[in-house]
Image 1 (cartoon, helix red, strand yellow):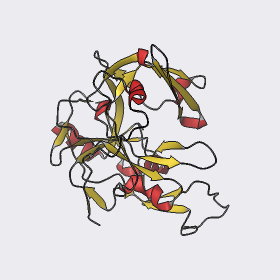
Image 2: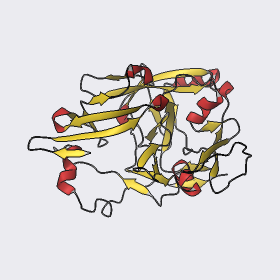
Image 3: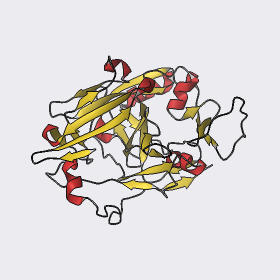
Length: 300
């Protein structure tokens, strides 16, 4: 919700967090702090939510002297690979897309991180798009799972999404990094509709990717990954999957299905994004944009 007065623009929106709680975030143009190279902006906010709000947070963050937010993230691996990473001082990039099973990306490489400080259980693996069974099950909106369910039942309502086969035994060692949040790749979404107002779900909130040119590396120093120390790469669009269909559920994970996408808007210099919508309302902000798209190759 956006409200414009003579002096400022106020904004309020809702965010679902852990344990079924919902936050209301309130901000305004008066609370604008700074803009970043990726088009994002930082604001002072007021939050309304459950008591002991900090107990529902995952991870930690800090701010530099020039108000750059850095988020504490983790990379879980084996003892041998951890030693190799620490000795080299860099991350070699993965060519795999989010699903990580049959499709690689040609024009970017990614280093993968998570806000989870440990990977102990199967559910932890599924939070980072992995599974010891190589399958994550997803249901379309409105479907009620019956008391007894067998794999293969309800093929129009239940998606057996093939993902990277991972084991908790291969994620026993942890590397901790403070990462400039503006380096993270934009997150893909699922659109939920039905008998209540539409809403969007980040498909993989416990996974963040930092992108760079293929064949390059991402260096770290004193457990920090900072903008300007390598040539980062992000894309100005995100995939939006329709959660009412099987194909829509899979789209943000395989990333190739781009029938539904958002193209990211960049505010004009000196115009906070809250004010932008009152300048460009009811205009076509989609057709004129031709963002570079990820290029994929099937390998399996």
